[in-house]
Length: 166
Length: 246
Image (cartoon, rainbow over all chains, first blue to last red; front, side, top):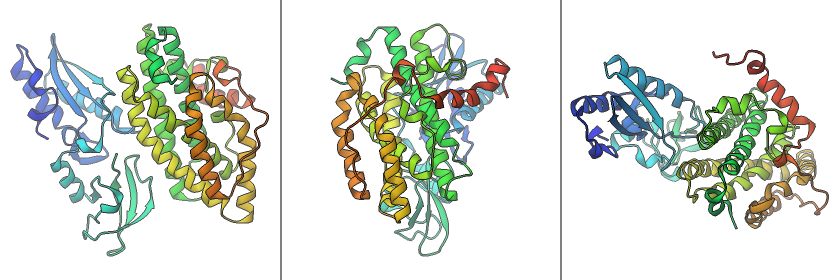
């Protein structure tokens, strides 16, 4: 998803327009620490970047309740913006509407597959990210992180993670 | 009557109490499930129980934080979790019951997961947007939890003679903590819960206990002896070194 297409992107009215646009670009470039090919914009959790008074306010919606990466993402957004000279930065966590894997951009899907993680889809439609064979076997619905299930390809024999549809 | 219609009408003090009770349920169960990590029957189960525990912990954190915002005197999630005493915790007795054997843990999970399916589906319609968002996400997670616990209960109940005996013993031992889940407005969740649980137990070849003696008190802060031990272990660091960070 382009930063410009983010929810709330059109709402910004500020004398710091240029800075906000730049801040949005920087925030959008922060990557998920557990899936470093995916930016938080592609993951769909970056909901808004705006300027309020003299500070930048970034709004993030958590993925899974149990995702331990959220704190890290919060810190990374803050430090990326601060070190780029954006001044005072506030990161707000907003729970509603709840995040869904539908918010992962098409580019995000492509990057997940190239990283060896089957992108979110109904469990019957999962393809092996390596050889693209259908009907892999479910090993465990709870994989290496809260958001992934562990599967194994019956064709090439490789185990892989599936980003659970959520 | 259900909570989603009731919550916004409660006065702020009652709303905080409501949020804390559900946060406490999730916090205490997260501690119990986390204790299985490295001791589960297989590696995948270590990971699954660790992930489920993290889900519950995440829900607890979100609810504590939200309770702090509603209360408005600056109490943080850490203060709610780490500095309240046993009498202040209002989790249901079911979640604080010891892990026992694996069958015991899975039956406890089944009974609680089926309840949370009803709870989160209701609260997802709350007029409080933060609570609705937390519930909407937790509902999706609860479906994974329920699938996991129900599959295990069926496997154990319908497994070997030994696993059947243990699973039935767990059902019989834990049944007395189920009525408490449905006190007050939560009574609306009982029919859906009974349907789900009865179906899984039937698949597992396990029998529903006769209605009998039921324990209660957790929601009023009267706990079984097990909670104090759990909190002592969970809280001692913050109690000994207040405000310590790492």
